[in-house]
Image (cartoon, rainbow, N blue to C red):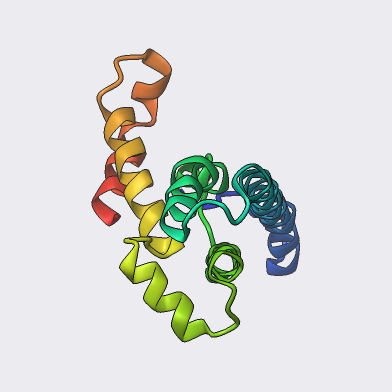
Length: 154
């Protein structure tokens, strides 16, 4: 969804009215990244290097990634925020495979079927909007037109 706010004066005041919302979304992305890292540390602490890399990747995909993407389907993210999320994913794979090479991380992401943040959030957003579109709640029905246009743009 797009960030909407009323113009209260000059273009400069309009720009500053939007800034707190952008900072709030950036803070949310940062906190989710921190929570993802904590979940990964907990996972690594429990299984250590005893489990194979395939098992660790599956644990990260099933237990840690939902923490990273929680609620982001309802936010309008900017390109740098997607880059921050991708950085967290890439750092996790660097830790699992003990490498510094981005090419190795890209091959591992492709091999294990892990998508980039933009793609994952787009899939989650489409699922969210489809569920929102069929809800028969009176309050949700007010926003059906917005949900429909968002769904068509995904």
